[in-house]
Image (cartoon, one colour):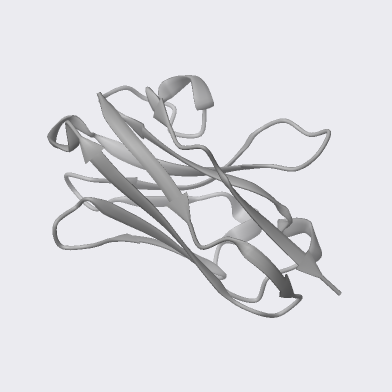
Length: 124
C-alpha cells in the first residue's frame, strides 16, 4: 500500500505560480511512476504530468508544457508540481497518483493509488 497526500493548492491570480507537493508513505519502493491529474467541475479527470521514479523520465500534457515542471526530492518520497504562468483554465482539483507498473501514463486507470486532491483556483 502507498499513501499519498497532496498540499500546496490555493487561490492565486492569473500569471502567478504555485508549487504542489505529493508526499508518499508506505511501500514507496514499489512505485514505478507518479502522475499529476486535475479535474475541473463538470469535466473528466485530465492527465497533467508524469515522472518515472526509476529513470526520471517526464511527460506533460501539451497545455502545460513550458509552464509546469514535475520533479522529486532525493529521497524519492515527495513529488512536486511547479506551476508557473497560471491561467484561468488551470483551475481544478489536482490529484497525484502512483502506479507500480503499466503503460498509458495518461490514463487514470493505470494508477493504483490516489491522494485526496488539492484545490487550485486561478482568478483574473
